[in-house]
Image (cartoon, rainbow, N blue to C red; front, side, top):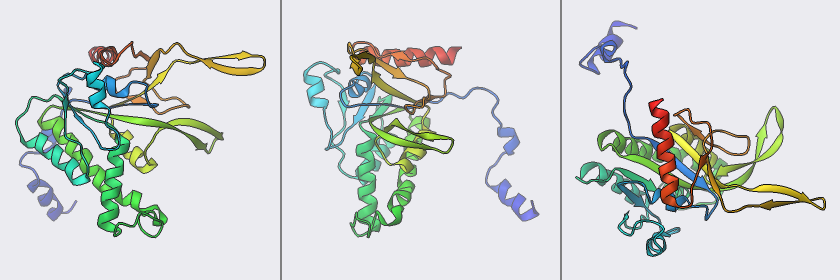
Length: 277
């Protein structure tokens, strides 16, 4: 490093970088995701996060029905319907700037959020053309949208660091063929957003649990049949069949209980236990 570069590096901070080394364990609210098939209980799970405020979207808004039926608390805090990408960023900025008692933000769903991001980029950069003459030309729209997506994740990080708010996404699943250079192709459950969006998000998440129903497959008269008693589970670690992960060294599946309150309690209990071990 030349002298000029050293001076520039020094001017970027008042203290020596070596003196800023952290050896202890830093505490930070987590970023997570609950994803799975429609109706498995994702929304009812996040509805029981203590101190949560829900970000909802016009294409998917079950919250009034969930409140009326008592599946989530009747006093659950719900933001106005978010209808544009600038409104997404405005909500996050207000949560950062204003005084409030919210301890978490839950975004329901990540697919709806991605649609707003792509629509915003299409209108801004491609004259509203969402076809292969605009946003989809050589798939560049998905790549250029990542700039906005990363800004959104940075805004969520600011809430985690400055407001001590945890972040939880929900997401729908879809089945997709997986190409493995070492194996024959096989199908996987994946989150229903574009691969580029998912790659960035998956790396950012502290935990990502796949919520699924327990199904037993039996063979009768040379035909396979699936049977389930409705029991549900959170898959917490990677499998060839689905994406799941966590940074807490949780390896076993978690019981999702009989309702959303039990489901969220089991997630938090597992994370708390892992952090203390």
